[in-house]
Length: 70
Image 1 (cartoon, rainbow, N blue to C red):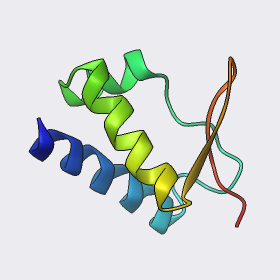
Image 2 (cartoon, helix red, strand yellow; image 1 turned 90 degrees about the vertical axis):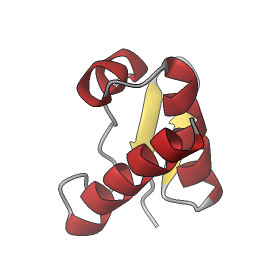
Image 3 (cartoon, rainbow, N blue to C red; image 1 turned 120 degrees about the vertical axis):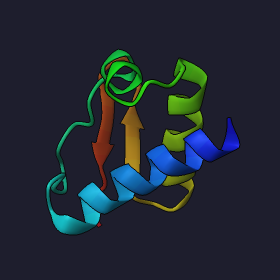
Image 4 (tube, one colour; image 1 turned 60 degrees about the horizontal axis):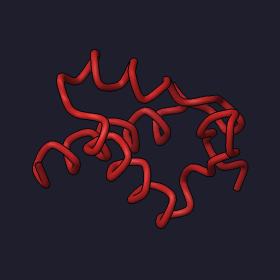
């Protein structure tokens, strides 16, 4: 599971770094990320948590997870 989490976090980090996901953009839903990457919701949550600790994304409860402005 750790490898899947790291792979997903790396993928999202790459999309953010390349500008494919720009500041203020909303990340796909957990369900979408699960389907697209063939991982469980736990893996998605762990990857998002890792990106939050790096300051790359921020969550808005009940709304979603967005690429950080800074």
